[in-house]
Image 1: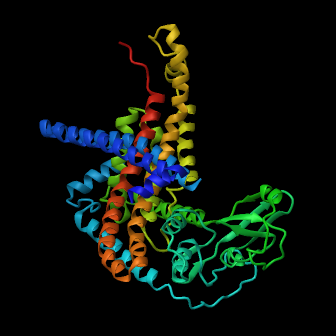
Image 2: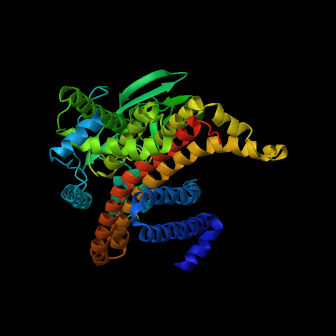
Length: 80
Length: 406
């Protein structure tokens, strides 16, 4: 499986897959931090839970946007 | 007025029954059922030729014909000894088509409207193409899109050559699957909201009933949590646009999750649709932007002069980048959701190709994952509609904000 990915690297497909994977790692770290910090903030200040939730979703969507750029670029490489 | 009747409804002890757990569960069981139905249908890909009724040039004629549209093509190829192509199946599902696959071998043909600068306009039913196998009226289907050819009517596409200069002069303005889906969602939105608006004038001051109960909490959510918090005191001017965008995106996200006829068209996962939505936001921001807003873009106050050489181009770029990201976010989110759900589903056939037993074994896990992804997409359908509306409201809010005097 891994060998075939390495072989695909030459054709650009493998690099597209690697790019999409790296973007997912970045978005994962970002959304993980947002979620973790938001839960911590909610635990510290339960009365602000609604504001925190709205901001959490919004920030997660912004981070996601960056990952989606990578995904679209990956798709464009694969579909040409 | 809505707020008053809403509050009154609350006082009289009739809580709005939307978003309740039983309702969500009901919707979920419906989805699971439809998924199972989809599996049964996919496996029943026998090759009996269905009746082929030919209807003379009627654009709205419903023709029952042998089906070989893109998604099924992949399955049929597998049956004929070719390899199952998951990519083809998925791309066929998330793309646009000249015809709407209903079930089994039945496809709803849609009108093809082509304008050619040399040949003029031609309108005919997409069943004339015999699912991409034949040429008609000097046109044929090539990888899903209409191309011009000089071959006679009824020639097999493999024997017809594409006429490049004529194809460049061809404009395809057909009612495709996505366009029809747009019309359907338009009809649903008009039906629901005209009904609700009439109910408010007729039953002024009384507790809400029927569809009012469904949409009122969502309207109030958009007003209080989106428009008021992001735009401020001038929010009322922009409520019609925000509500339209929210309900349009929400409804079409949900319709995209329904695997059978009125749904399943992936409209909000089409970049042209999200482009237009983002463009409207861009136009509103640009037209409604006040002096304060333009001052901040063209010459940010309180910044040394030489920094402006860098800052102003960046701000102008940002003006276009914001709606661009709005477009990509909605498109990619919905498309990615569809791709993931279908990928899990395709695993059955990928494994089934190596070994029938492995296919059955994987189908249990695969179905569970597909159901899980679809549940997640229900959440995403709402969140993306909310995020699009909220970010639009924030950009509008930044454009109409009055300067603070410290």
